[in-house]
Figure (cartoon, rainbow, N blue to C red):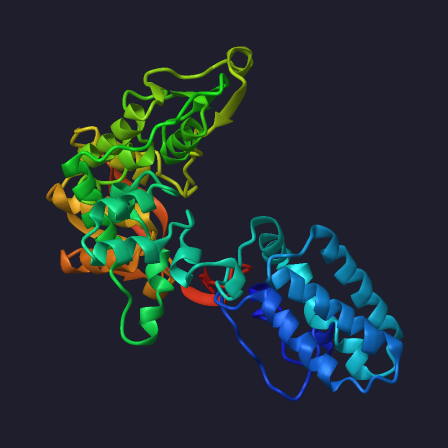
Length: 450
């Protein structure tokens, strides 16, 4: 059962209706480090060994299902295997003679229902999201990295003083080592094997050292041996657009990136605070991509995609999704009430928004903490209000800790219901207390006012 069942009553009828069974072994709780494909294989292997073999559905059917699962965890499965698993599983459920055989396919069928994306990752991407199936990854840190940078390789190069080699290992998968060395959530460190001994290797800090060395020594990105005559247009010069441009250029495509704003770089350039990620660092990495052969046209918004299609063989849209969520409470349009991105954007452009001496930041994500720490740097007394507890805050924990050290105040389990006005400007925020209720579909506790 998935996190959406966390509020499920533990009685026979409720559990059965959810598609599970009540056994004698108690509850087994697993997190994202458990591979659902391997878990299904483990239970099916147990059932296969326990089968008495007297009926064909259990004796043969579970064996065939186990063979398919073995292929999948070794990266040799096909999408047709998933249909075959479901077909055999339903057949065994309906025709096996005893309770063991009838319930043996349950782990496979339920993981296929709720975690099909993990099966598809094993088959299509040859990747185990949990970092369990050893044939499909180099190391847990590499597997956890969204770009799948070979972390062990570049850390080994750094440890032996081969910094340039480390840089070229990194850019095989990610052309922004300096940006990620400063503003990456560092999932790799959360999966580092060293955690089983004491604490993780400081992967992000090592990356930053190596990346800054690359800028200092002027190490360049590789260029294509030749161009293939094809042209690609990319709309948006943020990390996605520029990464696509870099890799397409390497493959021999002539790439032009169109950016509506005066400077390339996307969110890192225009919104991440300077104290976390200096703009010059971002722009130097962008210039390095330009020097490799990518053309970037700034102040060039695209209003006619069809016209662009006529001039290019392919178009890649990387224009972002900058739409903020409104609170929908009275007074949020008053003067002095700013969205987090609006505020951060103004400061990054060099403006000094009129925020007064006292600032309230509503929210618990990275944007909220960035806004709070930026306002504190502008001289304001800052107070963060969050509707859940500190443990539920989605912001990076080190950023929250830094905010606390700087003297920023936090109030948890509270939410605004109205912005109060004085002379046409926000004067105060009226809040109500919250308490954590039941779990929502993401596994987080829902705040409510009951």
